[in-house]
Length: 623
Image (cartoon, rainbow, N blue to C red):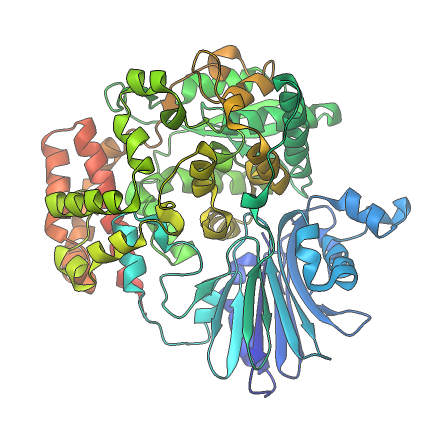
């Protein structure tokens, strides 16, 4: 993924070229194929180029447009054919028309309303010298990142926070954000970051910045999508498959070979199968990577789960004639090393660090093999493989799965849910979290959590319908996933793309009445199971078990015991102890060593590794 950055001197002073170069140098790994900048008075724009598409080598960014605008972008557009028609671009010129040229034409035609006309993964900035206005926008739900900082003298933006930090702005720790990471409370998403003064521009949002004000708005509302009524289920399936296949096909436009992540499930499995099918007529092959355990995980997962993806992933790969399948056990990278590698790229702690060792292994392997594009299906749970939320609709499901709490709690009124949460906090005091209790009480975390119930990621006051619950899962304005993949992918010189989060897929699947996702026998994910008949083998397509990632994380931690001990000792001698309960982390580690079990392994991942992730970040904060 290419990257962008820029400076707007709000006091009217000229941009210092040294400052803009510092920003570019601060995110240098985003531009393996070139870096450039342009400055005009109070505005300076930068671009770091990765040749991610066949047209990318023709890009000349940033640049001044014929109408006098200054423009920079990082973009892969997926509706090029529609835009060619809209702008009457001759067929002979289409292969040499860059994505940034199409964005420029879109802005000239629709102005600040142009973002909703652009499909794909992109962000861009346009400076209008006539109105002295900077316009910045980010895609609907793509794997992109965009951050900004503003004080009384300047406005800074970049695809990476490291570019902003390179200018030496004072770092202030966002303690609430850190606490939310430690207790795995995802309400920290949306615009906030671990740096109190640096903000994230969420998906489907745009900004207008002038010397007098900053205006931010959402240009697309998934929740406004109307319900679609078709005569038969088969018609929903046919149209869904057409849209989904197109979303995959668009993401195969790559300057270098394409690969995919492949689990034993339906999301990455369907992405992989559709991509392989599309590449076959061109005699091209698809590389697929599956993370597999290094140790026996037979007794390491709970009921209705499987911890080894090998058999089902191999079945999917063998079902297509042009897939080169690689099983990666990541024996050479420990959980601690995985966290260190990803943290060095993101510079922000994350609650899911237990998966970072295999994520880093897949990305490193892809880079070593010359891959330019890595496909994933991470957004599928809320889109292509939506379960239908049977826990909210099916009494039989509730009885069979014993999901009374899951069915009743979301429907309770706000006062009842707050009372339950208050009691839970009082009873367990964040027992499954590495947060230091003194830190939690110091910021009054319990009161903040209770007050947030009914807002944003903490669900509406009550979840009455599966559609409400589903939107809560997707939540375009609050998703952090795209930024994470953009930043990690850039660190390995490739672009990560997710067709399950294509705007067209999002809108279409959200428009389907919920009952079409649940079979007459109560089986969930009916739509995707029907759509991929023939594309995936039936033992994968009809499988009802769910995979558990990093099922052997406990064994891996024990094998890297010296690293764990050394790091815990370092953390005890740092400010980490003000935020993380090192005694609790040590206890979780000791219990895992004394008795290997599924509960102890899960506890180590939740307490030890989440604390390690936060601790490693704090060790380098302000350095």
